[in-house]
Image (cartoon, rainbow, N blue to C red; front, side):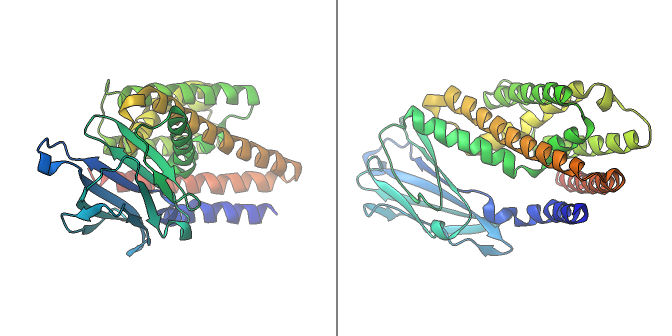
Length: 334
């Protein structure tokens, strides 16, 4: 039974990153032109980002209102495993009150984040799904819509953020006692909440590429700490897990902020969106921790301590190898 669970975990470890293209959210950004000339009114530039599986584009198309006509052709480029389409349209009646829909979204496993920016400074963000494939644009987004959208974005971001989950998983392997685990997770949460808010609001800025490389290095550090502990060398993380979680949590917060910067925040509800994105991240993190703890309790009931230790060692080496690969890969793009 444990051997099967190990094989399943290793399959997830190496298969999930390769399958992430299909479940990564698509994105449509619509910006109204700031030109004040009458002839330039109701002109919108569009950017559609659709995940690619290999070189094949997921079949998702934006269906605009009938009053919209193209004023520039669609240009398509493949960038970082996603197809980017850019074009401009003129919508005779504007977009407020109109309905946008997406053909093909209902036949995929991905969601789509729709972001609209108007020249009066307001913006809206809404998450569409294979079940909900259209959106009627109100004059102003409601607070409830902001709460629902950014909470769900936070949950999906952490659950699809494989590197963040591996860091939390490594912490769980080091911290054995439930009380210490609660303090450790709390420290990690507090730290990344601080830096995510600070970076998102513009109080501090760190380039995203070094941050992503250091996140990979933080996972490798924890994997090495686990191996050293198995060799009888008690490391700093085992003695002060909350401190290590807090220090690296500050780093991971910049990673969350980078993702939130790509999504964007509604200008009229920045604080609300930021709070509930963070709440969503925490909910997703708690879901993951709960599943890992339950699986750990189940494995301990099988009463095969030697085999369980060997399984854990193989898993830790796999985590270390994957995080090393990520670090080198991310370092090479500087």
